[in-house]
Image (tube, rainbow, N blue to C red; front, side, top):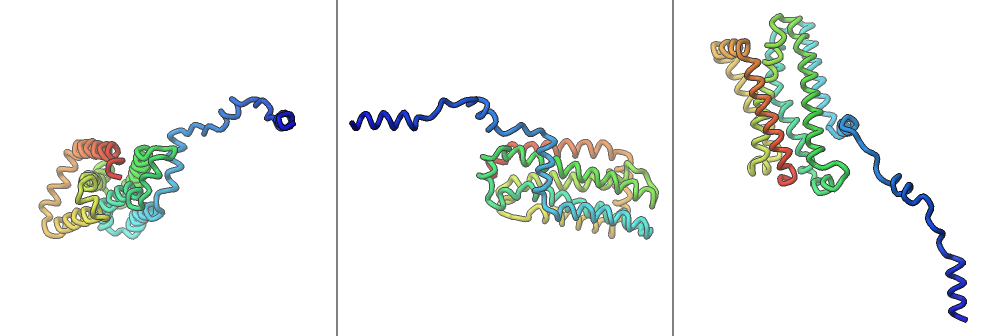
Amino acid sequence: MKNELKDALNMAFDAPEPKNKHVFLKNLRPREVGMIEMLFQQVRYIRVSVWIMTVVIIALAILGSCMHREETGELIPVIMPFLAAVSVLENNRTRKYGMSELEMVTRFSLRSVIFARMLILGLAFLFMIAITSPILVMAFGGEMLVTAMHMLIPYLVTMTISLQIERSIWGRRLEYGTLAIAMLITALMVWIRDYDMALVNGYMEMVKNWGVLIVLVLAVITVFEQWRTIECVEELA
């Protein structure tokens, strides 16, 4: 009797043969996400303060040009090292907040996330330079390419040094080591401008004659340092 009851229950509650099982399982897979969409997704995770700083620099260029403040052309290059420092700090937020292990097992690898943030910030800062350079040239004269290189050089130098520092043991222990590097470079630029005009004139002449080559070399070094940082980002985490 018990066996008959078990057989009856099995027949009554037997699960039906799954239909369209392969289609269902295929629909459970996450859809493909392209590079452009990923970049737009990562924009939301960059701190608002970074975008505010970028807009403030553009606003300074516009305001200084409207007020004919000639020191505006010297002020913006002095700020550029801090943009580089902020860019490096954005890449280290994962480690700072202890989210490395979580991001390593998410849909996008930690390396992809760091690469995306570097690319977004790099393009944003280049766009900012592309806007401010013609504004300064129209207000104060000079060559647009020289003005752009004058802003790019301190940014690239700071980026290169900061990335090297961040990969070191000393840099990993100091939370804001990159800001200290930016402050030192800015202080050096201000000191040279205030106390050695001959050196300033020589530097500007060098930028005018060799600026393109200098920027290209610094850009290659910066990209190399960024690649090294991306390659060892999981070890640093």
